[in-house]
Image (cartoon, rainbow, N blue to C red; front, side):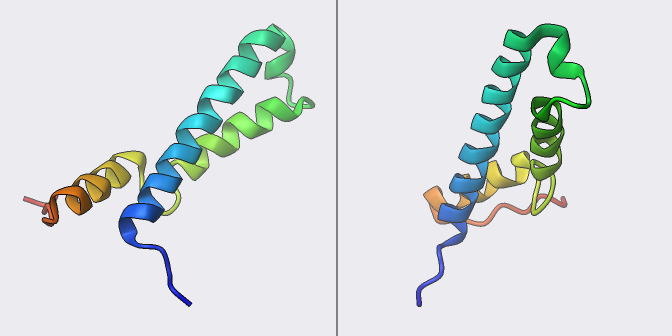
Length: 79
């Protein structure tokens, strides 16, 4: 069994999260005030997208992982 690389995992997470946010935002615009109702599933999906963007590494961290894999170099972010 071969596990995905850090680059592939970061790309997948970034792509999925960005598209989830875009789709939920568009649905929220379409539903107007109803989308903010806590009984509506779109409201929950939008909140979930925000949380999943942080869990397992923020989107900025994913971008750094992708860039590091593309140039085959590690970037130290704590300096």
